[in-house]
Image (cartoon, rainbow, N blue to C red; front, side):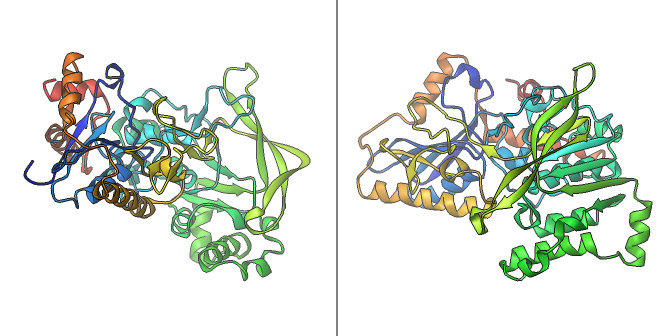
Amino acid sequence: MASRCWRWWGLSAWPRTRLPPAGSTPSFRHHFSTQEKTPQICVVGSGPAGFYTAQHLLKHPQAHVDIYEKQPVPFGLVRFGVAPDHPEVKSYGAEDHRALEIPGEELPGVFSARAFVGWYNGLPENQELEPDLSCDTAVILGQGNVALDVARILLTPPEHLERTDITKAALGVLRQSRVKTVWLVGRRGPLQVAFTIKELREMIQLPGARPILDPADFLGLQDKIKEVPRPRKRLTELLFRTATEKPGPEEAVRQASASRAWGLRFFRSPQQVLPSPDGRRAAGVRLAVTRLEGVDEATRAVPTGDIEDLPCGLVLSSIGYKSRPVDPSVPFDSKLGVIPNVEGRVMDVPGLYCSGWVKRGPTGVIATTMTDSFLTGQMLLQDLKAGLLPSGPRPGYAAIQALLSSRGVQPVSFSDWEKLDAEEVARGQGTGKPREKLVDPQEMLRLLGH
């Protein structure tokens, strides 16, 4: 190679390749090979962490970077994890969700928020989800931005979603939805919610919906609000005003005419998903009433002994994301959901690096991932310059190409993706959408002639 370059490969027949399964942001950086003049670097996963790491690695004047992805399309959860009405927000990325670990979570009508988001965003593995929205009430367990995203999609008038890139199938289901009330349940109180003020403000002003907040949850909070950092202070003040102040005339009219509602239930911890009388689906959630102990970061919710049941027909778990172990040869901390590392260098495995949520855990937004990925890339380049990485000629992509060929696997290239991208945009133009996402990998491959 005379100059730096990169290639992207979607491995659409991934189960047959037996390569490490890439996540979108639970991705890890694998330095496959270096040559004295042309370092060949492999990046597994084409989410934000993958692309940002590759971007930094290309600062090396002659680096050759190959990016691998298990899906036939790139960009990971930037494509599949963002609410369609929030195209400017790119903040999710992990391959799995945290289990509730309570009785009844296996009942029909119980889904992870991650799977639900993947369903309406066109993630192929979630297209068989088929959520039943014929119920009156939905409960979301969690009070973060993902929980608000899901609540907003459930309650937004479908005509407001028509010009987004939400999938055609999801929009059809939402048009038939009978969900009128959505509760977002959290173990702790107003000072501990994990969503941000922008998302809260949008929910408060959501067309056709009104907020339900219990003023009793905010008793004695005014003095505490003064002591918290400014972003948290502004957020809590907005919650406080919404819960305790009488709305102005215009807002009162809007809320009175609203046919849907959403509310925050604080100091509640899920204990069991309750079955319907015939035992065939979810019919409610049993919640333990909690109180707070400790201060600041040490604040935790403990049960008071009181129990209440919240009827519903749909339960969505939004209590956190987690990464998966990628391969037996790669160290993995199952408790923390991360690859043990020092500044991105995987411990005890020279030449292997990690970035994104699999490096630091499921926290932060895309700006955090960008900074984090640049640091990982910087460490790799430093080690390369210092001669700490395996040296000598190695095959790099040629070895992967031979492996795929021997197994009859034809990868999807970035130029292939550009053809799929053009097809999606063309399909969307007819209905005024930015794109109509292709959701069937087999259809994608047929369109490419694979």
